[in-house]
Image (tube, rainbow over all chains, first blue to last red):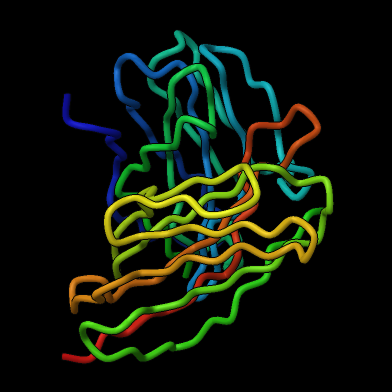
Length: 115
Length: 112
């Protein structure tokens, strides 16, 4: 098992374009989380899945953001009509069914730069 | 909205000394707390969690929780240069939610 894998590692896009990121969790983990982190801040929760079900979505999450986990394995995070304020590191994490109490394993992240 | 507050630092500690990192939280009902370590340019990794009052020790690390005063601390004994990183305090959002609320993190520098 190679841990949580995220692709791409870096993405530069023009304002107004759509972007999609992928996360492959640890195979036996059925919970998957997306966080966003900007410089000098801690990670900010976006959403999480248990298997294919999206159980929670942050109220701070714009309608331009959507996440899927269609078969309960990998997940995608799409941002439509990107804005400069979307520039951040997008972190994916996975855990066993016990969730946060079991501790997350984070991926290396996808760094998004909107120009 | 739960909040976790940390002094962003930097906190500079000489090698071999005890590094003390602190975190306060807003919700008196919060029960479970986590310390994550994040090296520059890397993703966070869990080093400790604590959910009951008192101390929890794991190797050179000791987490302390004081629910009456609403603070959590992390002590690192015999600090090493490899301990230089940002330390993030986090709590479970609660209300059935499984997300974590993180503080901004404290940047720790261990001086050789």
